[in-house]
Image 1 (cartoon, rainbow, N blue to C red):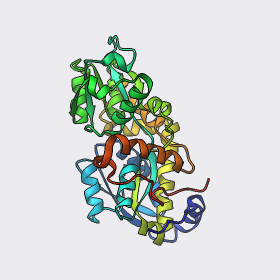
Image 2: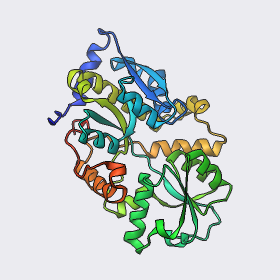
Image 3: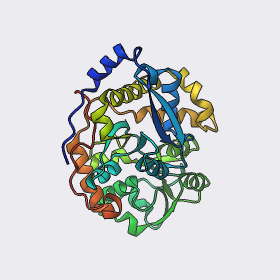
Image 4: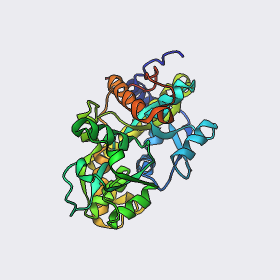
Length: 324
């Protein structure tokens, strides 16, 4: 598999600024769950005209969840999806020509009820932990590795795990029917708004394991052919995403406009969701591929072939690297 050339996104985006008015914007079919957090950024891109300004128009296709988006992308029914880079790496290792543009580094935490006596993971021995995403959820795997490293504690063997959909884990945890819960970041924000507290964040556990919490986990996924044939289009998507993030990082009025689609049940939930999104904005610049390899190695050790297939080394060309 040939190594994809590095695209100087900032330079291409500058060219786009000169030519976008002269060219008809290219439609980009983006498959995502419209009720999800990705739509907050897409709505900002559309409302501020960042897509047209960068040479494309969005055609958003609603799907049930992440796996459905992946299927639509694989079938050629979508040009862009949001997924994690481990999935992209696994697909590249299997011969698929997919590439990753950083979107978010937001990860969750292990939350406990506010009155829980637990002060460390070992205090959960014999307890019941709710986990969204299944036994090979990446956050759960990182927490398992952290517990083993820091305390020689096999948290999977010493606790009972309850796996379920994120809303179910949220509701069960808030009701006090679990000793702890690991959920997607936005449900974690809602759990904190309801009074639960993070016992440890996944970012803290990752840092203790020698991983880089700055590595973006989620990103826009496009085909390598698009990157080679129309690099200006990929640059435009990246520039629009970055522009929306800059707005959402600073402009509180932009969040007020998004509030109707955020499913925030209270002011506390709304505030927590805004803070969580902002905390997950990745820094501009190149993705540290050595750090990504360290994470891949850990995921392969704990998640095995079910998570990463037979891949052990990071394939070349996974990340679209901007100019540093």
